[in-house]
Image (cartoon, rainbow, N blue to C red; front, side, top):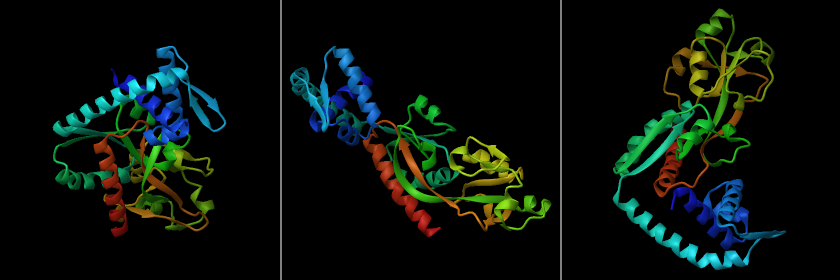
Length: 285
């Protein structure tokens, strides 16, 4: 049985037992639309109607009642085998990083995690888009919460971050600017930012696809950067200045783990420990 088919049957069991697509999705850590699609695909493969909808949820059909005991026993056996294999072989976590704060925190956390989990292999990719994340079938992506708006991803909050306006001292000097600036004055210059975290209006926006690109263009004095800068251990303290814009309140975001398929046991362990570590690092910074 392929992984895809196995997921279809797991969705069937969850919906059958919960009598609700929504509650089944929550128990599986899947998006509601994913569970709906799985049930539809399984129904088509088996050529039977599995559930009927009503105001309070769904009701299994006679065919679903007949299938349930066999599928439940099969999934139980497969889960036992998977657990046994997982205990005896090297486990792998595949992570995507799309934010500079996440990159720094992850780098600091890896050593701590390996000391407790020496048999885990971690693969880290730098990605600029959610599409690339899906194509590579990674476990989860670490990015700002705004990047996951209107998507089927589920998210786990890691820590709060603040997007601020940042410029190099050279840029300020060349344009006769001070670190305290008004919104009117600020918007006379190009704002470098990722579009998903920008909710303002300004004719001179340089849209980037990643936090790294935003940071590097800001560092090159192309314009004024707008990005989350917590825990940056680069040269922000010497080359760059966080601007005090008197009539703009800094935007708050959450740094999150986003995923679109159930997390493995070791991936769940990683995210739980990473959240604790990140909050500790943020508090102590």
